[in-house]
Image 1 (cartoon, rainbow, N blue to C red):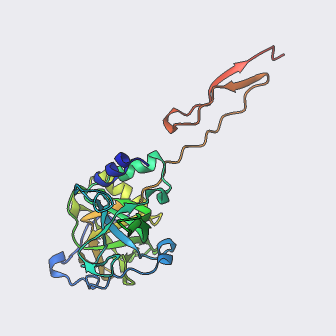
Image 2: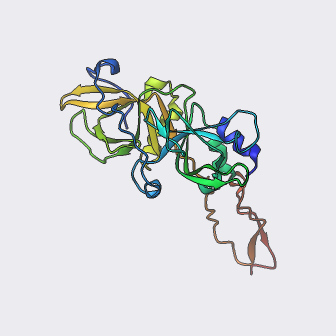
Image 3: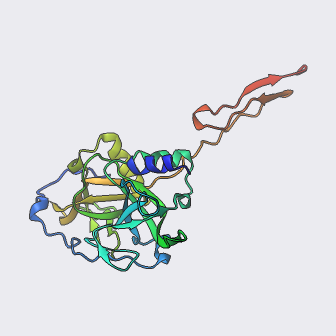
Length: 285
């Protein structure tokens, strides 16, 4: 992957209808405790919510590896443990191995389109730069989560899951939030999508992502009330979707008539797919 492409990457159903809801500022959020931790590398490939970091390009101008890498910080944490063992607001890695994302041009374009901030699920390794520099940290992302709304996010970062629960009366705990880099979780009855100014299309995309376990949001706690009582909810001040490669639609062409066949079938790129031209030869009789 070229340095130019890496730099471009780094720069680059329940809508809130609240009945008797408390404002976020009045509500105590039990997930705001500073308990975020970075666990061992094995957690990076599991189904938990550990090893999530914010990452941004190092803009300083000096010789590599002293400059030109990336800065990273642990999501939901005030301090991050750096490669040298110290705890800092952010840490420096001299290199980032983006190939581990296994994204093609379509997936990388989504990462490049990130707004607000870029979130990655990664491990921190090391790379030896030789004499006289020695060993520096290397960021190894395995998942990339581009931000979707052009705002500075506020509140706790949580991964949203659909619980499958259906109720006869509202509010209903249809969602589960799992705090990033923490074991804390809670059941939710509602997501306040209007808090961050997301468009209708963005909201639809976010809701669809929730069903594939591919939605992370940042927001604040509030509560909703209804016939079934009082339940927890969270605003969506910013949200992140996991970047994946586009899947080309599989072509299903009707069987050609006798003595006929298709020529010029195109399967890539996706928007140019066709069954080709039907070519017939000889007499069908």
